[in-house]
Image (tube, rainbow over all chains, first blue to last red; front, side, top):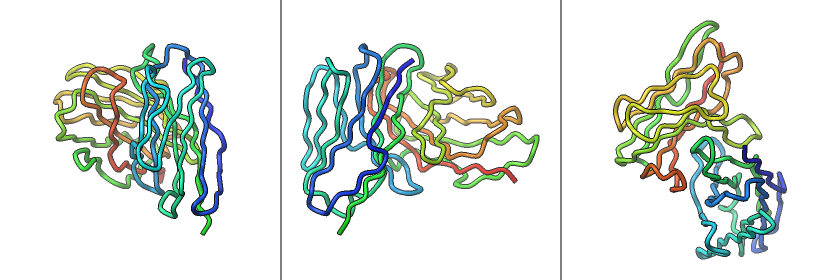
Length: 113
Length: 114
């Protein structure tokens, strides 16, 4: 099955700086890569996603890049703000086997004032 | 995401007891999913359903059962065979049977052992 590795597990940045979270996956047939933000005790919320026919996608301060050859994709948050503090999960859909997403273990992003 | 309702928010299970977690959606979504989240871990797929009266096992289905008698509802039963049920359970849905569509989550049910 699909294997998703997410790094780092914890990331602390100064307010206003950029944050980058990286995920690698194992199945070259994977074709859908969403990112979720989860605040403590709350539901994961989809913040951005990308499909395998696109290399980069931006939405205001958030961007995702995909390198299919290297089988990795990254979340970029610029001009970080206190409300960006949360746990971020990457996920991968590979299309074979179970029709759900395979999630990374999450990155706890801490924005220092 | 207000269209996905999970209940109860907190649930306690006694030894040997089966408990059922409710998930209802009014988004007219075809596909529904159940995930389990353990502390410091990502989400793991328990069961999913792409259409009424059909469902499939996910990666960790042992000790769980589901039904999909109505499009809006996808209840999860945690049976006594699940020896480590303490976790945060999340239900999700997506608009179509195509699995690579965005999934939207409910607020979750936190299950603990008495």
